Image: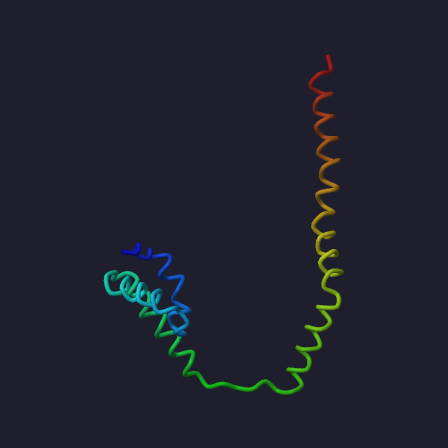
Length: 117
C-alpha cells in the first residue's frame, strides 16, 4: 500500500487536481486524503470555489495597441537581458565594495586607539 500524501503534498497538487491534469493514481491519492482530512477538505473547497469564480468571470480582450506595446517591451528586454542583469548586479555590488574598505579602516583605527599607551 503506497504512503498517504501529507497535507503539504496534497495542497501542492490542488492546481493540477482542479485542472484534472493529475495521473489517475495521484488523483485517487488526493481524493483519498481529502476524504479523510477535514482541514485539507476545507482548503480544497475554498480553492475550488475560487477557481470556479475565476473561470466564470467575463473575459476581456486587450486593445491591439496595448498588446503591441507589451510585445515590444518584452522584445526590448530580451535584447538587453544580460546587459540589464549586469547593471543590476553592479548596482548591488557597489555598496559592498565601498563598505569593506571602510569597515577595514574603522577596525584598524579602533585597534590603534585601543593599543596606544
